[in-house]
Length: 419
Image (cartoon, rainbow, N blue to C red):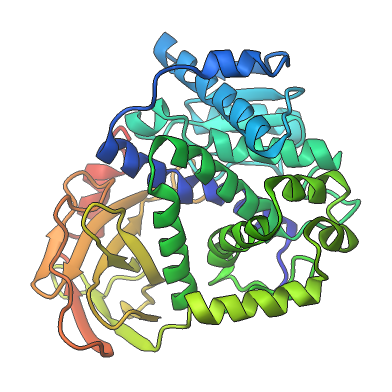
């Protein structure tokens, strides 16, 4: 299935919500950011400050923290990739409706941010929404580093990523933003990059699909688009950079982002890259062979539709990994491939949409060998998860997960709570 303009716009902002929680987990696990040397590094760039507008009620501390994150990204990417952009306007908002009104005024009504903790980077503008971000994410800059890398891409290309004038596969544009922001986070929290790599490989094994071979943005499925664009895109960009250099990635965008530019920047034709990367996939992310299936029921035994069921793999001292997921159907049933053992099942529901295009979400909890463990705050998995399924690897196709509360009760307690 081809990616439409609408689906591309949706994917352009999806990364912020998918990736912001990963640096946050390391913030909580390993402590605060390093001493503030950012300003000195930024001043050495010799570039003007970007134009910044804060839309909403921000404390002085928040304004300083978010400007610091933006300058840190500018300094780090200049040092690592040899590229910096400063001719843009950054809009930071704490209310989705208000920020989307500003976005619509600048870019038109077809450009709307669907999530209340995320961002978008149309050409020469950076929009960041904080309304649904936790205090920790707000302190650490949320999606700034990811979205600012899109500003650099477009500055080098001389056009919007989703505009005409040449093709950039969406896995390259998004995967490189994920990769670059992960490199920055790794400087603060060593081990994050490795955890992200392991998690992406697990999700790739669960999806079982190769990177689309077409150079344009076709070959993605609705079910697997997010994993292919962000997770596999991150792995592919890292693979390319390791074989060339960070500057080669910049050269690809600098010279136009087309297929001939891919070969010139990375030293291999498009088809040769795909053949080599597919061999790499077989080695590091072979498709899972085990099936997980069952039903999700409410406390009265009623089937629950639309519950997001995902594999959770916990390792001591590391971020929990996701390795396969799906949503329940009208009968409450789910089925997907994943690891055959040493995992639990995480459960997430979408809140009523309200004035948000896609709504927010609530973490319900985890289901494992000894039953259900609920999330305490609706935002994060249980501090101590459910008991993993043990024993020999095998299919688990008869799982019956009964929730202790109805979705309505969970929504009433968590959906409108400060996040």
